Structures are given as structure tokens and as C-alpha cells.
Image 1 (cartoon, rainbow, N blue to C red):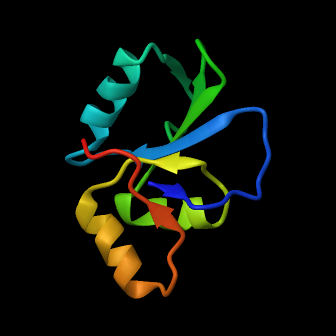
Image 2 (cartoon, rainbow, N blue to C red):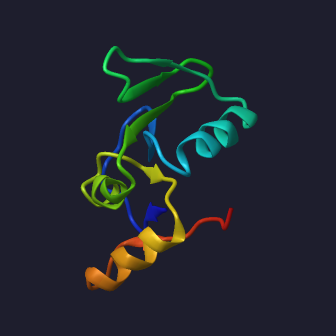
Length: 101
């Protein structure tokens, strides 16, 4: 999931994924296979990218669309159900499905 347009400019990419749940571990594994590695913060809610300037926010899946809409994160990995629910609830929701996993 990604906003259609982004007004936030930063030097590090932020990706929101589920802290726990069905997609949490597969999302981390997908990103690891892409060559990314992280160091977890003490509270285990933020992971600092070590290999590239890519950080992870570990949150509830229902919070991911809001974090993207607010510009806190640049991308998110959520189930299609969360994406469709968000589109149905918010007129002109600024989200696009980049890739079906």
C-alpha cells in the first residue's frame, strides 16, 4: 500500500508492517530476502535499517493505512481486506496496491 502522492520528504524510507499476526513474519522475511536487515529499538516497535536507509514500524494492521495517509510511513504491507475496507470507508482514499503478494 502506498499513498498516491507523497508530500513528505525524508532521507530514509519507512515501511509499516504488522507487529504480530498473520502477515508480520512473512513481511519481514520478504524484506530480508530483498537484502534488508534491521536493529530493533528497545520497545520493539521500530527497526532501524542497517544495510540500507529503510526503517520498519511495527504496528497493528488496522493502523497502517492511517500512518501512510498521515505521512508517517511511505509504504505498508497489509492484507487486501484492510486495503479494501479503507477504500470503502474513506472517500478518495489515497492508497494503491503496488503488488499482489
